[in-house]
Image (cartoon, rainbow, N blue to C red; front, top):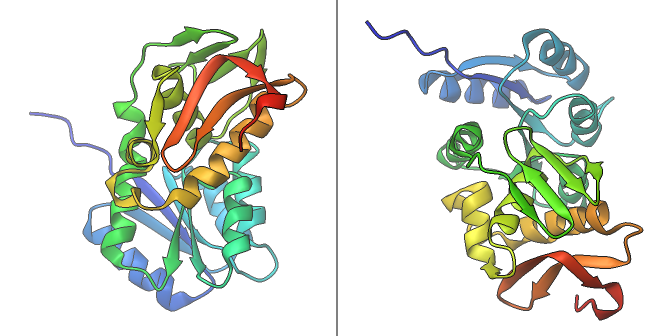
Length: 238
């Protein structure tokens, strides 16, 4: 007899009880183990005690925002975080991605869209290619989830790491926006180039600070090219 698979644990945090009830029912119907919280402090307590596999959280909540919650989680854990936000709070979504969120869904949203995002993030790690990439100034090791640049460790969020690893595996080649989005966020995200603008910007800050080099080159209207040996920042084209 094959052993029973342990269901993935998902924590939902939203100050609207109706949303937490709907999401609990929808996720439980997909055989996820679900817990909910209606305020971020309670959500953070459950997170620390229960150690979920993924978090879905609202952005605009009293006392602690979803951005602050992302920072608190990301300070110690690499758990995927999906944020929920109304369309008018575009800047808050960008701040959440900057703080370490992996994805966002705009309210009102389709339950099927959210479920697709959840499944994509939960299956990312097992599908990751294990061979490390050593090129130019970089060593990118997916097994250790580590990046070493010129002998120094660089801390990246899970999504930043996946994005860099995909680019590094195709070093020197132009990788299209569509292929990057599909590889990192799944097929449902292939039209959402704003993800790339935010995360490429974050990668550049972390990789290029004080180096005098640019490692990720923009190919206008097409995609990005990773150059592991870098080139002078004065030649930056973005």
